[in-house]
Image (cartoon, rainbow, N blue to C red):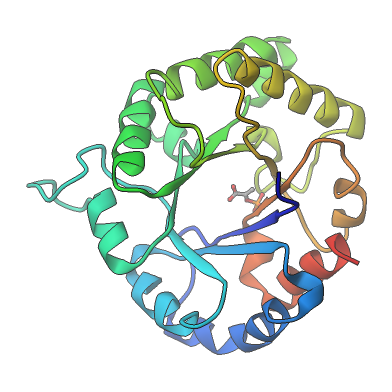
Length: 248
Ligand code: PEP
């Protein structure tokens, strides 16, 4: 059992080459003994992956892709990137099942195929799940999470390379976060659903409007092993603040 705390920076469709200049302070922080358990992973847009990998060379900061195709090799799929290509670049991780892709039409079955393709190429998967506001209001959060987990992880045998990011859709980019009790309750439910599939304890991360103000509270939520940070991760000052306030 490790005490790693994950800090995922999801840059979505933002960032340019000049963004790299702001990462030096973060690199310095990652080298301090105090932060040795901080697992920092950046997910820039595909266009910047190579530059980020160069930037983080000889550091313990990793880089991942924000998505991949379900075919794990090369293929005639215009506009797509495969898990093989991410791996060849030096990526260690990939985010799959993000709600912004689910909303754009990605199904649980698509996500399951992508997870298989990523694991086959030895990528670690940040598997995103979460209910919409409508589902929360209908009080079907549990069955939604159960469906997403069971379908997304169908036929998976090796759970070692999977991390779950619980991201209530109504919290992403809205500034609204779940109440402590609700978050703890949903995390415990997720653990229960997963415990029916494997004895391996998958790290559960929280994502949705995490910032350098609410982190002091969020870090105390039971059962959470880290955070998936969207917009606040694009400011290295805010992202550093989030890491510092979590590990103090
Ligand atoms: C996300 O990108 O998954 C996310 C949680 O974004 P934000 O932190 O901006 O809500």
